[in-house]
Image (cartoon, rainbow, N blue to C red; front, side, top):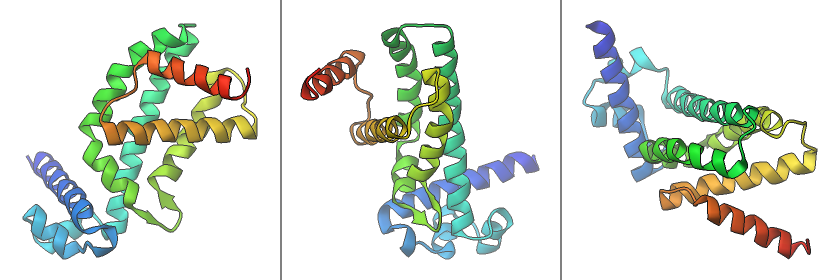
Length: 183
């Protein structure tokens, strides 16, 4: 029973934190605010986290780990030599569900930046680790920068619009980019 109660309290703390960051901004949120919003006392908060920074870092790590797992599934499909459009179709539903489920969390985490930690930096590390496996070779620094920016741009697009672009939209956009480059 204690484990379930601990988990419920942790969820309550995290939900309160997300709500407050979206309302007040990360810098303006205090531990007292979080405890009040979560309907716990401050000491209970400190049993779970040292401070709001540790809470934010844990939440970023947890979400980044989820994203890493999605990319690992994408790699499995690539290694099965599936066509890009087939992979995109298979992958779309799962990533759409993940992003919709965690959209408030992602919005809150996107505004938090301190020291060496930001959601974008964490996602960049995950992308950099997985891109060579997806592509089947080590991308050049230029490819890595371009593809990382593209993926993060799509990520922001999805969060803003609550849906992934359709595979046909992706294909058309790539075609338009090639036309722009004179290809």
